[in-house]
Length: 163
Image (cartoon, rainbow, N blue to C red; front, top):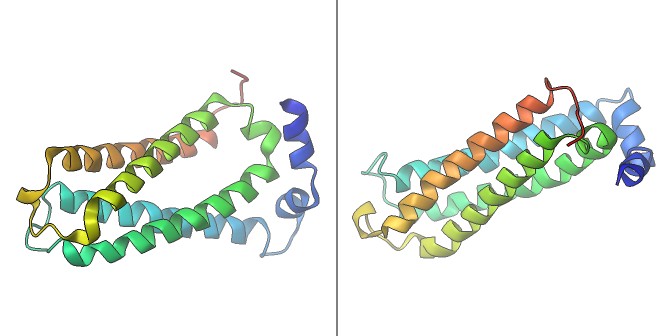
């Protein structure tokens, strides 16, 4: 696997992201990743907190549009995250915390998908009509995104040690 990570890191795109002095390279990709994460996690938090009973006067129906922001953020985060990973693949790909981060992202996206499907266009009029499973998914979503962000921040400070 290490050979593949070294190859990925040496591709033209990865080298450009890592070594270019252009603002369109690493700084812009990192900014796009931050914006994408903000949309993804922010939209998810809005939905999750409402499903957990925060702001009960806000109807659920209109919140269905927030899922568009969530999935737009997911797409931006995916593309920019792949570019960031490629720029430092041999280091990031050799750490356990990176795979922990990916696991929580994957779990968070599965939960978001389940909530998107189960939201039914926000047809439920109030929180009392939602099944307890929905509230559990909302709590799980908040935990997954918190853990993914925490693991991502740990990547900047932990010394890479192969697992």
